[in-house]
Image (cartoon, rainbow, N blue to C red; front, side):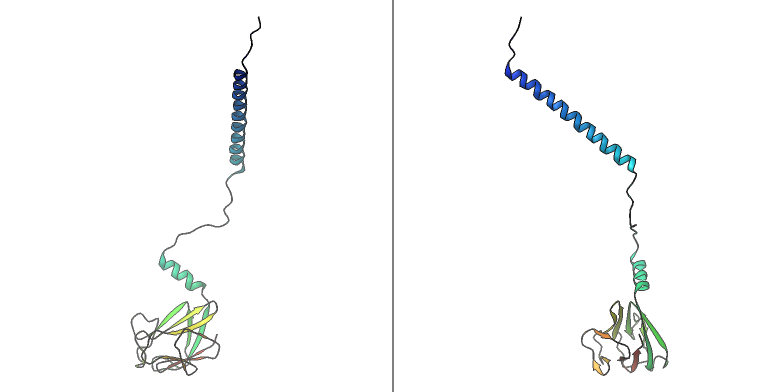
Length: 163
């Protein structure tokens, strides 16, 4: 004998069947993505990352910095005609932290000036010295970019920029 089926029971069965089908499709898609990623191998890394210490970073920065060349014109502390190379930053003075020590020049302060070789050229700045730093006779009050042939006077020491 034939029994009537409720409309709600039929739609619930159809909804459950649809959910099962969607679950299986999702499962197959997930497996396909995982297998595809596993067979492709690891992604190629275009650049390695390296962690270095502060001292090594300073050395690398100095090695990559452009080199500026100066020559001593006159100085009580350096020999006239002596060539000087500036890589990165050099502090000039009579103090112990000076990279270019002018201890014999009594007109030079302990922390007199800084020469800085940058990609855009050689720069000089006065570090609050008593007697001042001069470029071509003009007192340096702000960092000043130097060009070929410029004469830098620090105390009684005169340097000419060659490159």
